[in-house]
Image (tube, rainbow, N blue to C red; front, side, top):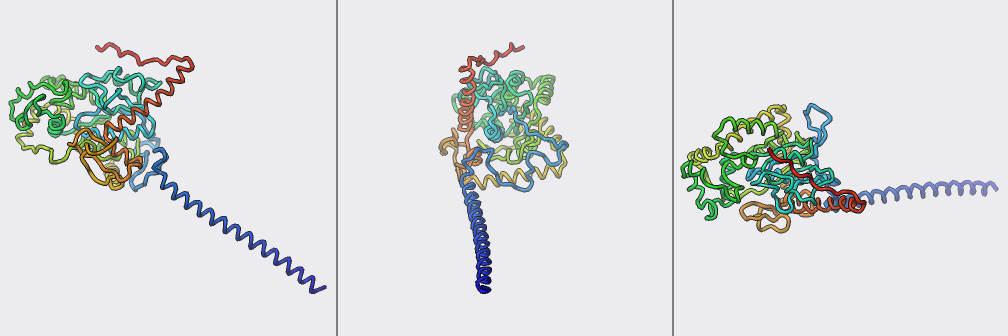
Length: 431
């Protein structure tokens, strides 16, 4: 009996040990399965990240990118702004800035001021809200982003933009701008001025000023002042020139300078309360260096005289940019600029396989001329890479189609419910 009782006790203990061993085994097996699922999910996430909407993608981080809140800002309540008017000046690196704004607008489903086709919403005629087709208007009657070529009409522009929109433009050294435009817009051909840039420079000032603007009046001397809505002839009236500077100072929160692109973008980031990745860029619509015409001091002096109004504009707003930079602690400003340059280099290495003639690229990367650079991409399925590489026309068409489809939704619903779809108001009589 003692032997049997001992046997029973030992058997019961063995059974308990077996149950505990089985439990531990199940826990270990479950842990292994969980680790396997986590690893698989991580691999799947990386593989399919490019397919997610852009606001769900996790972009690589880097020291110095302090996100929407700007280090050194006076306020801890910086809120990203979602509306901006960008007066896109011709041949001033404005396509580079435009790509930034189009990316931000697409990413956040913002509404753009667009024409029914192409990349212009006016010019040489000043902007008029009737240039926007009915099928692109939002219900509110106000737009979030204006980033395409137009000729400035301040009052008319304010009627279509959000009341809180930031106002921004960009200027470039007028001699460099004119040399670029002369080549890009084919001033030299017989249908236009029928002379080379060298021949033009050699003309007396009166002969230069007498030449008609080309492209149905769209392109010519002091192009930046013209894009901003002014007649270059006002340069002979100091009172009108000062009024122009005063009006533009009041209208624009930021006037960027193309030769200070990185520094200007740091100020744009601060103005909009955006992240560093929101303002990274690849240079867009830039000509190949071999196409540029070298300038002697005498050449430059002759063109500065012809471009006098643009020279006044450029010097004034370059000084204003310096004042805005000086308002930021120097160490903070330099850190932000260095962080931006590093991020741009990161994306160039990540996205660009090689440079190519823009006209040789396909699809939405295709440029209309072989005189400008484009980019062969490493991975066109990557959202950021594909947008950085898109040409202005291709990206504009993409945005217009998306906005058309979004606007069609509320119009269909209003129509079904018998509600008034309405139409944009007629512009008030100009005085």
